[in-house]
Length: 395
Image (cartoon, rainbow, N blue to C red; front, side, top):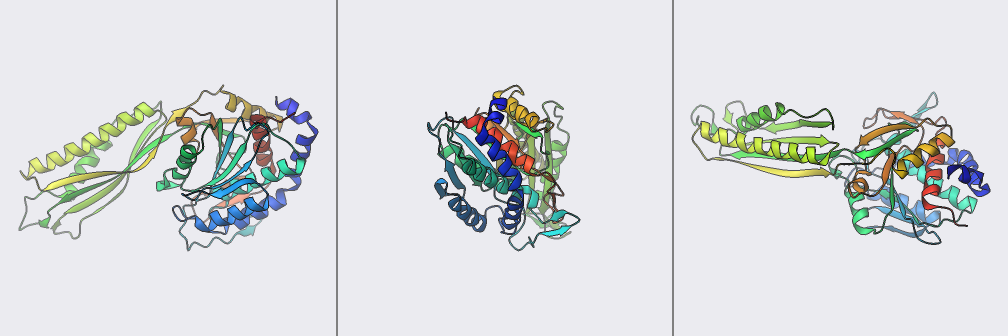
């Protein structure tokens, strides 16, 4: 299939266009990066990207209710239907200095690799399809989706798959960390909870004997830390944030922790979640029994829920991506499972993978994030060929 594509004159024209378009792609990457887009507040970048879609003359361009930017290249038959997801949000606050700086052919700026590169890469793919005059059978739905990072909890991707029906393939374009040949074909699921303990509190000496919210929290952490989890499928837990109390001589009336649980297997994740929740209840019960008091309660608020799932490495979308890499002289690297927008289609049994937008990068999620543009066009060519092979060229 890939060999036939490469023999097509229009496909060749698109590949050549992408290579010569790289300077423009890099400039757009810089421009996108310098527009702030913190998770839950992506409006400025969404509007900026919406205007870019309009300039490209795409069909059905819109910003949906949650803030996802959507544009379509319509096929002659409308099927198969492929969707791309390049998340538009970053982990950086609105007032972060996003000005891109260059030193020794390396570019530096927060969010430049993750995920400004991917956003620029898919724009180049759209230009290549249009410039080459290729007609496709299936629709390609290009999106710049919100709320991928952190507590955004993949809300953008969830909305896309709730609102757009009959999607046949999904491709998440995400950062540079996996390398240009990387292919993520599994979904690492996660459950995240904010757990708050509340009691009456009081003076540490005069009212000693009342349950402490902090002591209950400590009991819970002690139990959680002793949980045994399997190496395969990889399953993990972490209490990442703890806060509470007021002074050293006050029985804490409030304490809070954030818990992150992850697994590459949905059943193992569910088992871990139940075990953690049971231990939290036990901790509260023990603290109340210790002081023979009912003045303590706990509230477990789920703040993150990313579904898990796995595909076989010989599934069509994975083997097609491998063939595309080889055709371009890129060494394929199967990365197994990861956490990306691809979690959503994979969990729904829709064939999907996550790929890089090209180039090299590092120090992601830090103000020292960098991007190396050498041969970055290969990532764009890879995405282009993969999309053509999935959407299928019309005769």
